[in-house]
Image (cartoon, helix red, strand yellow):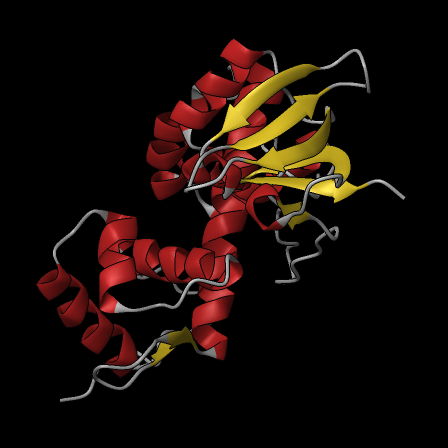
Length: 232
């Protein structure tokens, strides 16, 4: 018997929410949503992904045919945006109201967002002044399901000589955030691409103003989760 479609205001099982959020994240980064990429993103087995993709298709949350890429349906996109709004607002509240560090919120926000009611989330948004981005620079969807983003560019895709301000640390990975803290790098810093070392070497960048900044080497894993807003 086919599973019924998810209603717009319904909160489905947590595993379903985790998958639509992961699919959204891959789509946003321009990564093909395959069994392999989802398994890596969620740290599960490919067989688990295959079973869940079938479930999501029956729930009309994704478009997918076996051995092809998956994509979110309209209802799947609405659900993903609701999940992201809840999570990112709670992260913002923990930092702004409770003085958490930006690398401390992932586990707490994960736990709290699973239990938080829609009323609580909207009260948090009101308390914070309805922010449009979280403390990592990730955009927060609006209450009516709109995702407003500022044009930015992932460091890994930029050429030498490009410069701009750091505006986003994708998905707030605590390991990345702690490394940036160790390097004294925060949102708003000026970053200039100096060169790309050959043979798969790091991306060399300058943090700070010309002739005054610090030079760092960012490997591919780090350069693909940092975005800058280009200088005009």
